[in-house]
Amino acid sequence: MANLSVSDVTVIGGGIVGVCSAIALQEEGFNVELIDRGLETQAASYGNCGLLAVGEIVPISKPGILPKIPKWLSDPKSPLFVRPKDMISQMPWLLRFLWAGRRSKVLEVVEGMTPLLSRAEQDYRALLDAAGLSDKLVNKPNIMAFNSKADIDGDSFTWNLRTSSGFRHRFLDTKDLKAVEPSLSGPITCGLLLEQWLQFSDPGIVRNKLAEFFLSRGGTLRTGSVRNLVVKGGKATAIALEGGEQIGIKRIVLAAGAWSGKLARDIGVRVPLAALQGYHHQLPNPNVTVNHAVLYANGGFVLTPMETGLRIGGTIEVAGLDPKPNFKRADIIAEKAKSVLPGLNTSGGKQWMGPRPFLPDTMPVIDKAPNHDNVVMAFGHGQVGMTLGATTGRLVADLVAGRRPSLDLAPYRATRFSWKSNVTKPEESNDLIRYPPY
Ligand SMILES: Cc1cc2nc3c(=O)[nH]c(=O)nc-3n(C[C@H](O)[C@H](O)[C@H](O)COP(=O)(O)OP(=O)(O)OC[C@H]3O[C@@H](n4cnc5c(N)ncnc54)[C@H](O)[C@@H]3O)c2cc1C
Image (cartoon, rainbow, N blue to C red; front, side, top):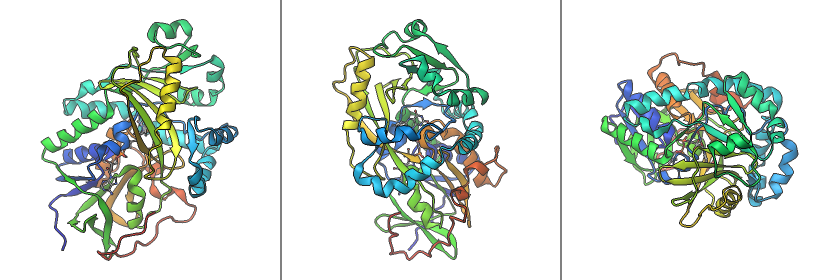
């Protein structure tokens, strides 16, 4: 028998997107319950590189990527790797991802991502100030380091798009770079100062502190794993947890990161959501000083000085939703980091793997569920989900409140992936039936 919840809105997923949405909904006056499996250290919001990557408007799949693919696929040390056993099952997604890298589509994506990312800092500042956490956004720009200026010039497509969209960068020659990051050496000769990009002091701490803020304002947190959404009479009516308990709902926000695809399917929405695994190596005593977050373009990793130590993070591994970690990927980036940071102490480091929720065009879904007026979807933020937490929360609140959203959400609709409708009539739930995995 359903345990009728008193919550006005039930948010599924306590990553940064779910927590920010829950707080924004509280601000609207809603009584909000957040449900999470309680494995927050597996969430991408815990282990990411912590960048407020506001200029990340150009997708990874872009003109020029195709010739690099064969090398990437055959080299386990490359920044993007597909586990051989997953090659066939992931091929349809990979082909869509590559197809989204055509010039016309990339320009469309840039147009879609720019308004979202342009307001990310402003939305976070408002949220963090309200929560008394303004010091968690570190007021230092990011640096992108390169082996040669030719590497920058070779990607003028990206840099020109960033500049024309309002994201400024400044060239740093060897001397300039040495002045701001004296520890960097090895093959690195120059860099770009990414003026508007910032960093969080530690993304996992930010997420946890925001969750505490949500609770302090009367929100409730339920630890449980959502098995499926219950649909009756063509309407989402409840949430079924693993173990059988059902929670009655009025409205749902689906924000379960890379795990959202199966639950979206319960309400008849099929989205090509992949889990692109990333890794980090967290060093409590790195023995070198890194002043800014440094994206090392040639190495395919990011160095972020955090309040918990130096994080070396990055790499993309296509290996399905819940694979066993292959911590060799984390070791590889730690080894690469040693080559540009002489004296780096990796002992005592902790390794981590977690999934980026990724749609082929690199844009999120922020949308009301078609045919289910009481469900809002907010997932698929790819490599910029940490950056877009606060902004997504505000947009989710607009949708749930039935207000015209403060920006045009057409680029982020769930139905964009098919020339014919990817929305099907959901099956009516039999409480005892578990849906097959997506
Ligand atoms: C290595 C790496 C580096 C990155 N660096 C950056 C960066 O520098 N800047 C940036 O902006 N982004 C970065 N990202 C991307 C960013 O981390 C993600 O886009 C973002 O964290 C996604 O947030 P989310 O809330 O949607 O999902 P998640 O953080 O994954 O949270 C989803 C939550 O849903 C819960 N959940 C899932 N299924 C269920 C269920 N059935 N029942 C109950 N609960 C459920 C999970 O337990 C989890 O807590 C990086 C990602 C990786 C992997």
